[in-house]
Picture 1 (cartoon, rainbow, N blue to C red):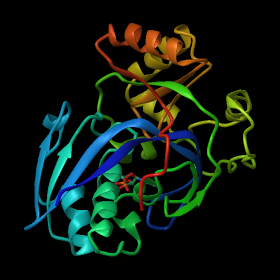
Picture 2 (cartoon, rainbow, N blue to C red; picture 1 turned 90 degrees about the vertical axis):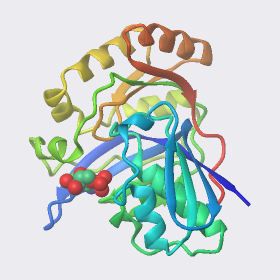
Picture 3 (cartoon, rainbow, N blue to C red; picture 1 turned 180 degrees about the horizontal axis):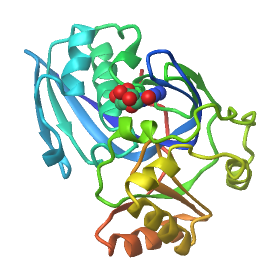
Picture 4 (cartoon, helix red, strand yellow; picture 1 turned 60 degrees about the vertical axis):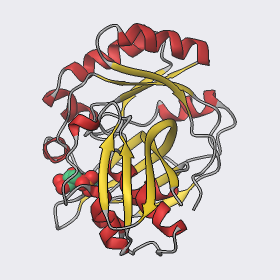
Length: 274
Ligand code: C5P
């Protein structure tokens, strides 16, 4: 019997860096949500193995240190894993953490309990296990689920530049920023966008310094009518929030003409099965 698990794209709608731990990892305060686009993982009981296909398969090795295999070993699970990579690699939208979380969810459905301290696999694994709107704190291990967010129409854009996460954290000018303001229950998209205007992604400035094309992506999203344009995670993927689905798909088509990966999407409709 083969199980299928979605690995939806993770978006940091807001991400404040609030400190640094003794081991060098950064303390974060982030409003995280998930998009309706993502990678797909299938698991078939049998000896542990990994095959990768899909549009972005070429960016990824299927070797022993692939996060899908590390996740399966941590859970003690045996399965033939197939990863269909639809999202750009090393791009700030979960990627390896989302895939690892999907493997762990699938193995849990096969009877292997979730391992402890999944942030050891990747700081985004705990929030990706939840795959629902959440506040993420600590280095990623403190996940507080939030009520559903209002419907959002968005475009994800990656200029086909891979950004190395450690270098972006190392480029931070300030590491002791204020936490997020209190997160209310948002009545509608306007309320959420208004709240987001008082927040930032603190990794955006160092990411632009390392990859200036990110600033072009953000400008292009705004020029296409995005009500808010911001980078996710350590980049380089950016998101724009649009008034409706038509505006999002027109903007995505225009941005794709630059040779960029640009997809219109919305919030993931339901939490992934647990
Ligand atoms: O956990 P993950 O593999 O996503 O982290 C990649 C790198 O990003 C870490 O080795 C660390 O340098 C940096 N990082 C950090 N603080 C976090 C998450 C990641 O400094 N909260």
